Length: 130
Image 1 (cartoon, rainbow, N blue to C red):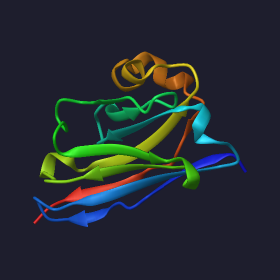
Image 2: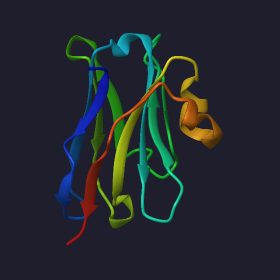
Image 3: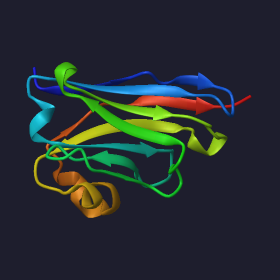
């Protein structure tokens, strides 16, 4: 079955850390740019961090720069999002997506292309609260 599955979400206190995983099955992430997105009820889905398949180039939203790190493990067909110094405003459902065509910055910034992404996961909840 071709799918993306996120894991690693949970409840964490402000200032804490979590590492999210996005595992692909049925296809190789080597051929795709991968992005992490987040969404809270009533708001548009926001691009968080994206990574390119050709050179590992990355793009991150200003709101998470210096706190979140995206990386990939090609052997495990997995992309990670290391989230440090978490804040209550980071609370959201986090999704990963894979796309063959959109470049890294386009993937993270341009909302109109997201309906065309090749694959989306179902999401994992992250809650930052004391």
